[in-house]
Image 1 (cartoon, helix red, strand yellow):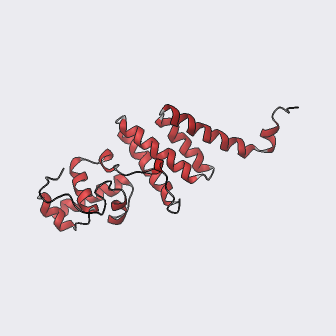
Image 2 (image 1 turned 90 degrees about the vertical axis):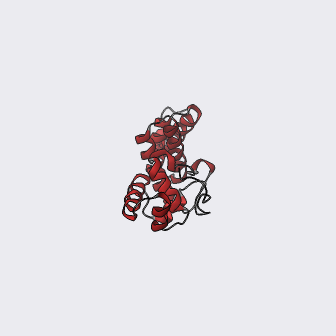
Image 3 (image 1 turned 30 degrees about the horizontal axis):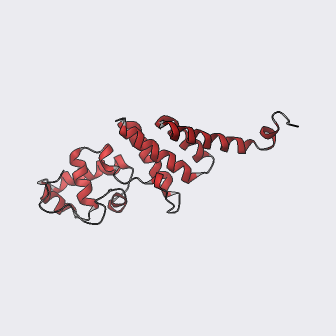
Length: 174
């Protein structure tokens, strides 16, 4: 015998969790970035940090692919915030490599990649023909746009260049 509403009375949190995960599954199946962002918020409120980060990171990729820069940026910042709370846990859906080019200008991307590769500000300035002050100004905007606080955090999100090294010296930046 089924009792109508019985589960809602006994396990209201379980229904909220089920609804949040169902929202995420539906959004993943339909590539709905807006619904994924909503699922990320719900899962975060319920304390499911890693699935929330997965939803936010996927929302970021979908928004970026649709050229919705503001929404992509917001999802990226939220995904990064969530990932810092996950004690190093990662899944394929939380992979944010290659995200630099989504929200940065071409010059900011050049400066960010060279900095993430370990070049000091003066070397970046010399390589790009800029003043050190201009490089530092670009870095300030990069940090703000990516929601990171310094060179080490930038290296973690620098994609294929990362800290492995700068582009070949013969390559033109950008």
